[in-house]
Amino acid sequence: MNFSLTQGAEHSPVILHVPHSAREIPDDVRAGIVLDDTALQRELDHITDAHTARIAGAAADACAVRPWVFANRLSRLVVDPERFPDEREEMLAAGMGAVYTRTTHRDVLRKDDGDHEPLLARYFRPYAQAMSDAVAGRLAATGRAVIVDVHSYPSVPLPYELHGDGLRPAVCLGTDSFHTPPGLLAAAREAFAECGDVGLDSPFSGTYVPLEFHGTDPRVSALMVEIRRDTYMTEPGGAAGAGLPRLAAALARLVDALPG
Image 1: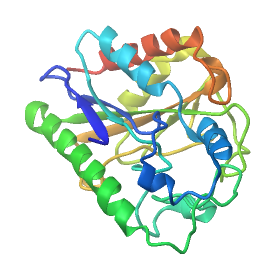
Image 2: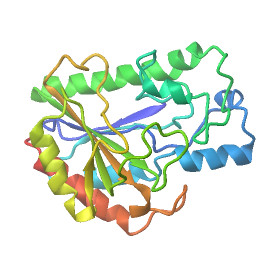
Image 3: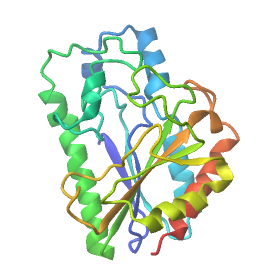
């Protein structure tokens, strides 16, 4: 499996979603990437939300009611499961739609005239279906689903960022006008208050909801948690530090604050 779903409490509506923590790239996908090995490792350092799976896992372990954890086991350089797979995706302007053709520094990653359908069919759509099934499972069991999308971002803007001139708080909360209720946002602000300044939708906005439910099902709520990397690790791509358990504890507080 290219993704994993770690079971939580049956009566928990919460799914911690970790889409960008892995670095693994299958050999056949690597063959379509034009970077040499050194440049690829450097790109992975910049693009990977390093240690976010550890943050989510530690948070899940600490919660009074264990949430479910859905994690991508492959690098986002294979496919990015959170992008729209069509022209709706604004990151296409940076060569970073569902299949990236450019790097964080806007260099060529893979040929943009290639056929990306095999990657979408093998990796993107099965991931999307599995995440939809996970959400449907929480709806069936609890009547609602809460997706907390766990990400990180660099302290200094990278050239690919379309909105890199905005504020870069210790924790950025990404929201959706339909799927992020005020109570969820307030709980997140309180939970992460001890981790530094908490901002809203800058430098990254929005949050992930599977397309099956996006904009149509109010029983599905969602919030993106973007953690500035210098608060918990050595940039780029280095070891985690003392900030990691503090952030995991904050994420656990958020989950515990949500009604079961």
